[in-house]
Structure formats: structure tokens, C-alpha cells
Image (cartoon, rainbow, N blue to C red; front, side, top):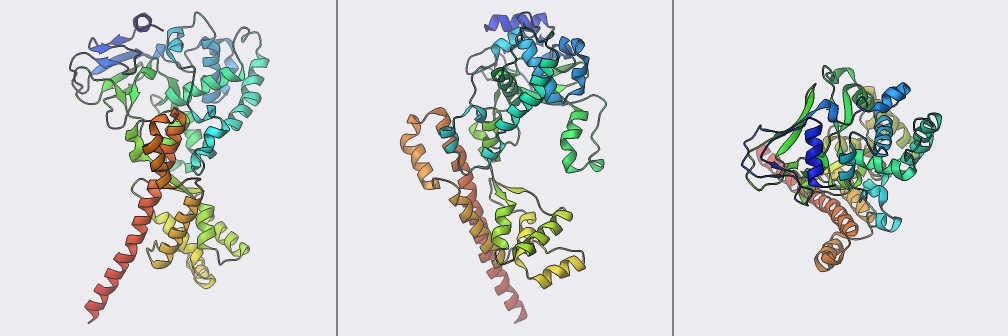
Length: 426
């Protein structure tokens, strides 16, 4: 796909391009050739040029498609349009990658390098292929006259899904506002399907991602989507968008790459079953189960908890530990008085978390020190996927190290507070 063809497509589809933007498919992406101030419209793309459920002729040919989920609709539209030589988005599809480093495409040996990271439980390859068989293939078979000549293979399905994962955006529908008070946390997916459109903005794939270098963002309106500078951009600078507060592990799963600036958003997940098994190890199975039921009823127990890059421990984790550490009489008093323990940073909580940290470390096949040595001694010789796996798992181990520092500092704080209290009494 030549840069000339991209420029022709933009012009043909009514896209307004700022004269200071140089379209490029080089590693540097789209670049600024003259200084541009903040809040400048760099591109203005008509709504008709965006890939949405309503813009493809497929919806006209099969009206029942509108009854499907946005994911299903967008995948079918991409498979349909990408197979048409005369598709409105032919030039856009030709600019898209056909090889991927997303975890969906990693071999078992490559995935083994991520052992210990919770991201392995989020790849969803089996679920995706079940969707293909149960939804996509069933719908295609029922509308064979429309999908004649269309590549509806499992490979084409994965490619379409990979493009959506890496390059789609969720834009709020005009006139819709989210009523946060009227929805439960479990309603997010349902609400998103009502309030937002999942879309592909042509050639958004040419913009690089970086948390620190981000200088532009897409802003939707009822009639168009604009790419707007978020700060002054100097000559020779590439365009970057912000991938958001997303851990490197999740960017690897969704996009197949990440900027090192996303290290600041890394997390390590602590499963609630691990917390409970350590905090409640002296409890019987039936007692643990009854306490779990009680905490679930009170919406105090999550499936897992994210520890962020600073290693801080949330009050929710402290409450769970207290709930499974106390004796039966104390826990019954909580239930009777309809209250739960406070988030305490005492010695018992500290010891539980230190044991949790140790067990979480044991889930990795290598140590933090070994990973540092791998990147330092043979980093250049590592393949791209192997290197990213080592960086991701090392990032999670760094959070465990900081988490341990935070927890051990509690002992000093508690001791100082105790001494201060004694002095005040005297």
C-alpha cells in the first residue's frame, strides 16, 4: 500500500488533512512537517468513511445482522468488506498488518515464557473459536448467497478480530449519556453496547502509541471524527496517541506490542482464592465457604485484585484478610452488627501479605534476578516475543518487590506509633 494511494483514499472520501501532516508508512508513522499548536484539527474524517455497523452495505443486504452484538457485526463487516476488491475501504485494509504478535498467535512454548502472569488466563482463543463456530459460521451459512466469494475462514476471522482488538475505538453515541447510578458493575458490557459504537477509524493504525509522547487524540462528533493535537507539536515529530492506563501485559494481549512508557501502568493480579487460602488457612472448609458467601453478599469480595506499579495495598485487600483471619466469635459479631473489619495494617495482616507475595513469586518459573540477567546478558539475542515476555514478567516481579517494601514498612510505622503512644502516657 503506497503513501500516494492512502492520500488518494483520504481525498476521495472527503477527509480533510492538515497541510502540515506527512502521511508515511515508515516506522516513524505520520509526521509533522511544520510546527502545529495544541487544539489543531489534524484530520477531519466524515462519519461515512468510518467502518461501523451502519456504513457497510452488508447491513442493507442482511437486515437481521443488526440484531447481533457489535463484535459480531464488526467482524462480519470486516470479513465481507476485506474480500471485496472494490470495497470503499480497500486502501485501508491494504495498509493493515497481516502478521500479529498478539498472544492469540503465540505458540505454547512462547506462552510458557509468560508463566505466572495472569494475562495467560485472558487470551480467550478457545472462546473466540467457539464464537466463530456458533455465531459467525452459523450466520454465514444461513446467508450463503451474500457471502459467496467472501473469505470466511477461521484465519480470516482471527485477522478481523485482531484488527478490532488493536485498532478499534469505542465512541459514545450522540445524545446518549451513561447513568452511573442506575447500573451495576456487571452491566458494563450491556451498557457499552447501548451507549457506544465500536468503530475502526481508517489509518488510525499509522499513529504510534506512547503514554509520555502522546500528542493527539480522536474526538467524535455526530457528523465526523477529528484527530486533534493535544499539545504543541514541533516540526519532524511523529504523531502519537495515548493507549491509556493499560498494563504492558494487556497491550501485548490486545495489540501485540507496547511502549516502554506503559511500564507505569503495569499491574500484578492477586487472586482472591490465594488471599483466602493464606488468611484463612486455620479455618475449616465450611467456615471459609460461609465467610466467602457473606462477603459476596456484601459485595466485598472480588475475583482478583490489581496491585499497581507503586506496590500499594488497597483497603479492600486488607478487609478480606481481616475477615478470614479473625476467630468465629469476632466474625459472628460483624454479621450481627452488620459491619465488617476495618482495613488494618497490623502484624497479622503484614505476615499474610508477605506469604501471599512469596506464593505469588513461586508461580513464576524464573526469579527477578534471573530475568534481569537474561535481559542484560542476552537481551539482544532474544527474539521479539521472548523479549517481551521477559519484560512483562519482570515488570510484575518488580511490583511484588515494591509490594514487599510497602508491607515491611508497616512494621516500622506501627512500632513508632506504639512508642509515641507510650511516651504520651508517661
